Image (cartoon, rainbow, N blue to C red; front, side, top):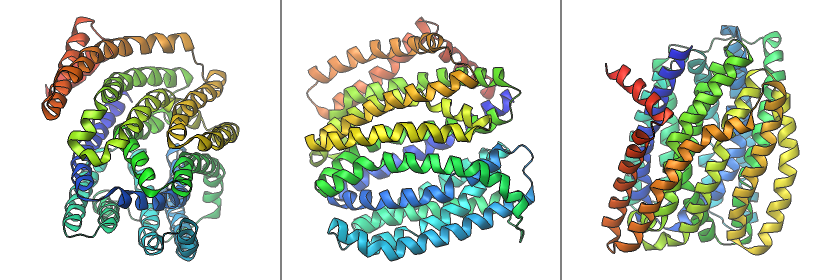
Length: 474
């Protein structure tokens, strides 16, 4: 199991890092070509696509991974159920598109929603493919499908932006990525759905899966609540600065988080008891913090230079949102593995109950914040992450065991060397006048100093990662 976890995380991290390097370059190129208003349109559309997508990418696939003896009947049953559901969801979205466009007073939303909505049936197929690969912990398959999809979609998106397609370049890039990713998996995993459907097989999977689906649906709605409010109450440009500011930190954290969850959930589900789950959580969290802390806190320090150099001055209003998101995601990622533990022991009902408690609190906070402007809405991210972590700890402490003091002690070494690293990086930003040179020097200094501090302090996570890499290269 340890070998599978390590191998899975290496392949998944490799896939995410490579894909995000390409995506990052593409996003920078597109942001320099397109206008903030184009991104505002996509941000509004993405609210509704993301909510609809939850019905087909969450719940049923998770149930297939969690079930220890899932067979061909289970997979085929869930495939056809998911596909039919996705077609019905797309039909609803297609019919509602004019109403949504009228609500925002933006006629262009109608065709954009109807085209972008085709992603829903594609995602329904992809979600079952992902469950199949995850159960076998054969994460190498994800690597090739994601890389090919990312590169092909990058070419399509940039080409269309250069030829003046505006918002359609962003839509085409996302759609191409989904289609190619799904097609490559279809050709490589060797699994094909059979004409099978069993109500008997579906019943226990749905009983488990609907609670995960409901949990993720509530979470997604509230995650997009701020964007929904900003898009309606303020301008599309305000929404664009807000979403672009969140995009860079989340580009890193969401993919690291998804990597961790993709590997840990099947590992925990197949583990031998609570003690092994605790061991997996502690080691994984320490490695996650070691990688994530310098990236997020370092980005907080260099945010102004980063936006100015990469996206140009027209995006400078996004800088405060970068910093707020970095701090919020550092807090939020600490609870990432906690929910995976509860799901792994089969208690999907608990995750749903936690969401039903947390989200009304988030709603009240959002409604209060909207009276004080976009910046106040952004700060609710940090408040909500603190509340979420507090609630997520409760069921883990009760059913699995959670030592808060030990958690802090595990966190402190990585946090300490990160904060020490940030001091000279911040100072360099104040003394070097050329923005491009300053950003390069800040990043290089931060990276080198972090490694030197890791060696000097004999950081546990650093030594473990070094051992893993040396074994792989050896």
